[in-house]
Length: 263
Image 1 (tube, rainbow, N blue to C red):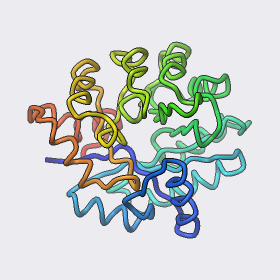
Image 2: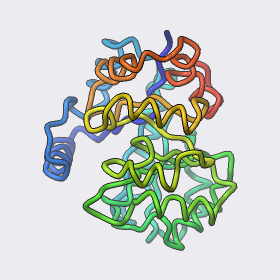
Image 3: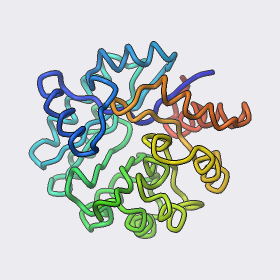
Image 4: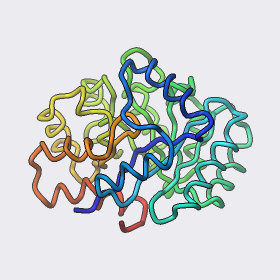
């Protein structure tokens, strides 16, 4: 089996400890990886994972260019292992120029984390960026957290209505800790789901029901490294006892089609 991880965070070595501490405090559980490139590669090799989509979110407008430069630099160093997503904060006014620069850097899409960026997923600035990105530029969104309203499945559905041409990925099976609303607003819609940070919180058979209802062709396997390891994420999906064909689609074929790259 080939494996294409579509959701992995990486951070510069000099800030990673502070970032991981912040994330663990925010989510109230211990993360499994170190969050640095060398550890990610080791975890991928341990699990037999060929490729991973990597990113980091700019939590302020002034961080945008530095974050994009960092991710592009990692991809340039390991072009056969990583695909990079860029980041734009809605307060960044020159977003069209930065989108062009992100493409020139070789990054293949965007990542938004509304809860950390303190933005509503369907606010006008996000809508403008998504429209400018175009349908050939996949956009990954953290979706769902019952503690906040920034990234709710309802808001994600509203964004899809406002930008129907967008190629969107709703992380965490459409709604981290808000899967009832994911069923209500997103299941069956024209959006990919990824499997990251789901199995620790949702019954596996419920995950299987969501996959069946949403359509296996729109499900992407993902670890959410460093929250979890790729080895654990593979084991999580394998417990669903899917057909070999469906396993191949989720583990790598859907991502290959989406990003135009064969692992």
